[in-house]
Length: 225
Image 1: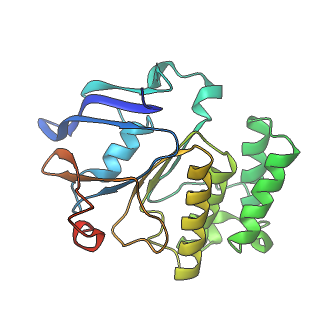
Image 2: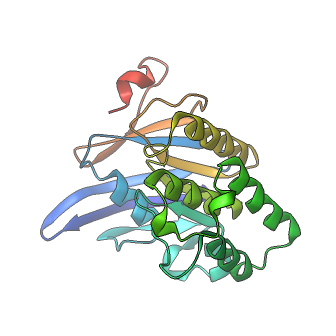
């Protein structure tokens, strides 16, 4: 049984399905890429897997429990960074860290890890400011720092390297590989070739169908769209 499983799920708007009969399972420590053309439904699929959208059919379970029945404690073991991260208007960047830490009753080691991530992404000195004053790249680095600081069992990322400069993108890849090495299952949509990460699998969403790419015979440069 995968840590996150989708069984024959479907999603659509009005009378039209974006995709249907989609199934997947993520195992601990996997680093899985999700690729496909613009409009294929990758962001929607990630939002459904995170429990942000209502399915038309099928079921999604996390650690054996359907998303609708997850306790708050178990839900905190899953993190999702959307393509456009949202923040509270009246909280500074570090107040977001404090809110997350207090809500999850972090111990000292976790607070230290959050501080390390902020420093590594180069935003620690800006954390007394409000996220809405940040550039898109800085907001992305804050969102990724918060998600990684949770040390989740499953991490979902929607185009996380898109807004980042090359140095920050490499840092993010390194942090993703580090957390996957500790057993976190990672599913990440991406339109770019990655510099350092070698994915366990590549899934392609095309014309409403999810399939596994043969990366041994088809280079990532041709798979990525």
